Length: 264
Image 1 (spheres, rainbow, N blue to C red):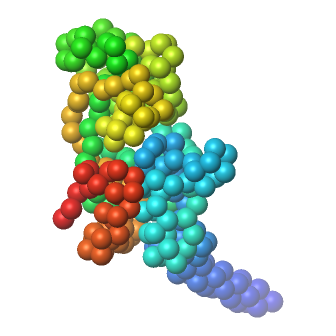
Image 2 (image 1 turned 180 degrees about the horizontal axis):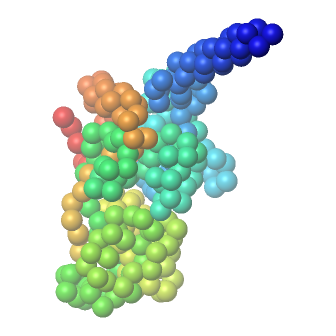
């Protein structure tokens, strides 16, 4: 009887291991995981002209990054789903599989490189200081702005740059919130991406009375995936093909970022 029970136990254990093995084979890679569930979940923030909700509350996102993400998802044979995240929690969201990638004008830095599998850089950018237009002549050097009260998106390259300079900075949820702080007068200045500044401030924009003065360190944008993900290389191949067939530059021109595209 004991022998029969032992044999039955061994058979059940083998069946269990076989079941685990067959399940694992379906999710050997990140791309397999994404294809299996039928969608690529993209972590974003409201960041014009990269990711912007077409109509407030619609859940439909457009912009250079959004359009390229949709095209990449289509190349994988899956749908694109956009989720607004707290930018400061992007690595945690990625590792928890709440999202599959961070694709939102993300600056390449040491923290990003150590925590994610990243694509090749695809866009040039810089952090810039935004102030009211009538104060631009006063605040045109790093020395002149050192005593200002700044706003910057939490976890952003802008916040990092201000902390490195040891300037007074208040963290806010998004770059768009940082602009609102300056427009409302609750902050003297903010630091945002140059690409966003081009789309959001100055004559004919949402903030005609704001301008940028000091440009901080130049930087590059990348897309981030889970550490070890094979999707980073697949995206590199997609970028290469999109540059070759002209579709990437066409999308960039639609949103006015064609001068920032890194062509390889």
